[in-house]
Length: 249
Ligand code: UGY
Ligand code: MN
Image 1 (cartoon, helix red, strand yellow):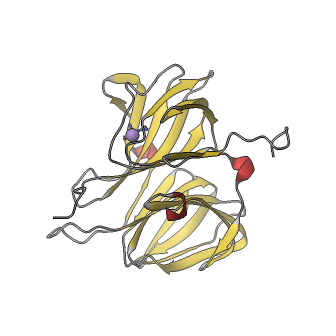
Image 2: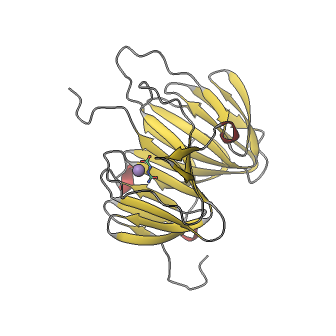
Image 3: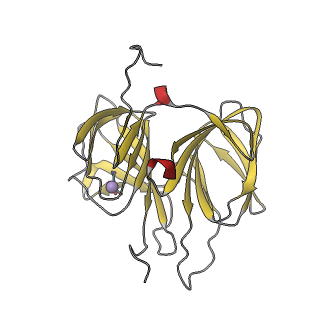
């Protein structure tokens, strides 16, 4: 909770939203038993995807089928086991799994307090492309590459950079003082969770102090820029839609 009653850094605008944890309200989702679910971003906000945080309580579990959606699931804290498309995985903090559309999933054996971040998107298949498979990995196995030549702003690309994928999920880590090199304005939409540190995010014509735990939604063409501040690196994990034509022909 905020120390100052009635104050929040949360702002919801037509082209972007900054959502800070003091305002998160947990609910329930079908299939997720003994779990607290916060829907941070959804079409109700104006987005074309959803971004959720799920916290397991005692005996928490989740199961279902992705249907028309694909899921990217990242372990923010704790550990759990998953069975996805019949394949078993043990997931620990920093681990992730990509679950393609039309795939059965089960999550369980989670320590109390285990937290998952989930991005969900309607899959737009590429004509003639091979079937998408389940991908499991861990962020530590992805080297951070300098972003546009800057050693102090490094990008870990967690999913294959290949045309059948219509989403990307990356982790961006900035040394204090490092910035996005220019104000980006692009067709891709973003959903973002600050993982570490702090900084200032420029969103459209607003300048917002941000820190670990904050969530940001950026609509297509929302001008965006970031500078890391403080004494420790700042990092965020973010979603973007990629590799599809803006108008279906
Ligand atoms: O991938 C991106 O568009 C990224 N550079 N954007 C961002 O960090 N806001
Ligand atoms: Mn961007």
